[in-house]
Image (cartoon, rainbow, N blue to C red; front, side, top):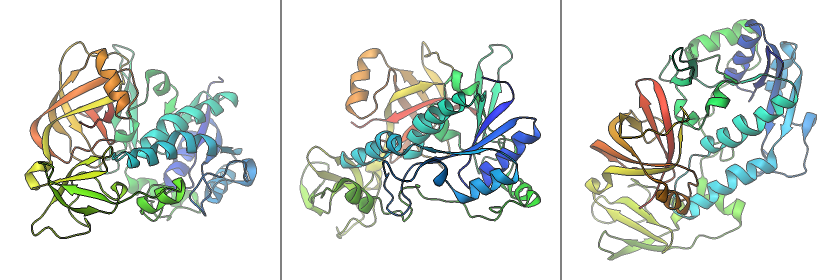
Length: 374
């Protein structure tokens, strides 16, 4: 890799555009790129369709051209199908609620895209994520920290990063507020300076996960039983892909008093319902766990834990589990080398299999993994 040459991942949004500008100002020779992931019309990958220079976000290309940067559109549709959409639909079909952005970051943005950067002779990849990377002067290890603006912090979806990756990643926006980023975009005359942020999963722009899953898989997800905690049948649900842990609205029928989804039994096509207190728990397990330091702690760890993207971190004791729990992690859709048990100081609402449990020491991300089922 050549020093001072950076590949800039550009989505067409204002954040990645300003990241490109800032990297240039730091003296990097920059190459812009976008990932071609799916057909925006259908929301599905289109293997063998228009690729390369004919595809890619027009705004990203416009900004790259205004900065005098070469621009590439990498066709990663097959990888996106295999690594992101297939696991997403499979998880819902089995009663889990995944976060596809985490998997996309792990396998594509900081996997396949970094490899493309190496082929182009780039020594680092820069993105528009709101997070910070620092190197500990004593240990030499790289630290992943929250963004300075915690209202925009995206460290939760970056917990899979390794020491090797952190050494070759740049987050130019980590010390900036969103208002500052907008101002820089306006001053630079970028076409997307006022472009609104997308709040939805890119391949489910209308937010209707169930319709997307049916369309993508071509499968019907049949009705099944609502049951209480003792197994007594309470009614009929419309298919498990319509529900998630903690849900109380849009259950499809009235029960006379508030009922909450406590568990989704994909094996028997059942939705287990309970009262408001039944969705709280003090324990969780997480598999496919990545310790950012590269070392598994030898004992218990006291830290704060976040089990949802926008949740405030909660105090907990985290216990690394021995190797025999790896099989359990794989069985629950989280195939990795490590697993942990998390014991919260206070009961937590709706700890959801498929979501991520991310550990924090202050603003430093210790690691994270996929929450497992029972």
